[in-house]
Image (cartoon, rainbow, N blue to C red; front, side):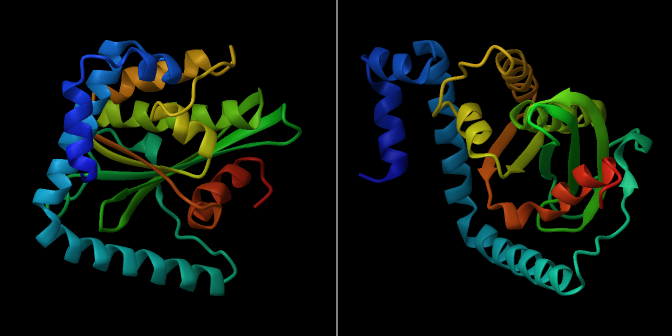
Length: 227
């Protein structure tokens, strides 16, 4: 049985109560997420012949760009501030998926905190960015605030197809339902993200290594005047 077959079997299962309870979800919400994951996987498999080639080119471009950036001592392109853009920044040609990298930082945990966000066209060019000081917060709150801010831009631009990249394993696993959200400081932010996610027709979360998120990290630190 492959992953797609497993998701289909779980969707049809009449006894998901124990699984839902372990994930901190209702049975209805778990079935909804299983359906979304199954549809996403079906879509990716159906586009594998064309998508794999595009993905390989996009990955090569990303890795190549990362290597060049590292060699140039982390010099990053100056992108248009996201808050200066009032409409969909995606070019008319190419993917209609907006790829986002987010990061949050706290000097003290809790302490003065900031966020950094990079927006780009999937398998394409970087489009714009955002850096902001958010006051006093923990690292995890800052990570969530970065995701919330990024999705608020998506709502403003009426973008419905999103890939979110973040290096916080905790936040990634909470948003995908693997971990429960127990912190009273994080739960309102989690619920806000879930609400904004539901406005999208296609939404994918990727947990990436910190080294692959250096641009967003740079922006968060630059907000402090440290970069």
